[in-house]
Length: 310
Length: 200
Image 1 (cartoon, each protein chain N blue to C red):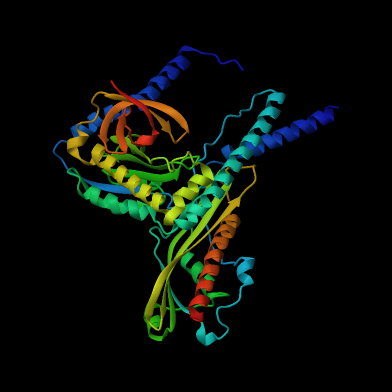
Image 2: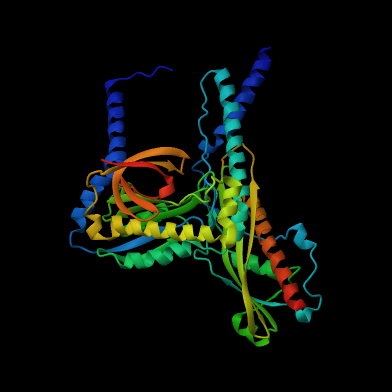
């Protein structure tokens, strides 16, 4: 199929590229500037939605979605079989992940992640020097379109989830936050502030134990290691939210220049990843870094391959 | 020869349509309301009762302690259920526990063997043609008005679906089957506990 590339199409493509780049790279700085000027010396009675979709640990699986259909009959047949094989592989990976995690689920069933998170979130919100909680809405599902339409701003949505990395070596606790100060027509798409905070635990075990072996280590001694990591993950998420959003003094420091480069094992995709950013804090066994886009990552030292000052 | 080609083309089109079905139907449903009816697993049906004397049937008071009492999770759509408490009540009052369900006021007066059952979690979560259904109950036991401890009971079951259609689409029957299997595991454990306590 031939696509005619007239001037109008070209303009649309350029606009989309610029739009995408500005959304990914610069959103944080722009939002920070807007929010900084909005906050000033004001306080905001804010409706806070804390969504935690699941109270049970799961193992992450990277879903393959690469097959495609082409227009020719042969391409269509190849595409169909490719898609079926791909779905079969995804299903098997998910089934295996469910089987592997079952023993850990059994031994940690009474741990309520949401309750533990909210127990730490509530005092953190109370300590904010500009955000006053009008209501804390704890829920499994996000706001519906109707609820979003009817909500009175300012409001903030926190979406928190937790899981084990694909090989079950690292616990991940992640929160996404969006803050809407003023109502407008496209409220959902235009938060004055949005960011993510990710905690990666240290690697469980000392001998590169993976999968079932790693699960055994997480659940050993009444899931002692798992409980400790879960508590640390929640505490680190709350610390990062406080640092980047709830405390005016540290919030105003956002957007200063990069000071370091870190290469680390990224448990999300089981790959090595290099980021530039600035160190927010460093303890004995972990580093909190704010990357160029503004996202905060709390890294166990054993995930760091190397780092250098810029 | 031509008719063969037509047949092959029709088959290809049908398979393509089935594979593309998720995209075609993505906006058709906003939520699924599940009406649960307790159906015990075969294993539970075959279990022996904790007592055959109706005077010794345990008395249970049931509390729903879930944060969100409507939502039970999500598949490709949010799942809602409004009869969770009745569903658990039905399971505890059925074979093999045969508990007598009471209110807190009445139960305290007459119970020699009392269980306060707290529904802590009922959840379903689907991904990539797999759906995990879980139930978490906590029971505090009282013998002659004295608490003898609290125990948690967890049951979990994984349901799967075929490759055709949406990756996370599970119908009401599959959800009911998964949750009933998970609840049956809890019921089996609670019944064993009751037998153990009574034998002391």
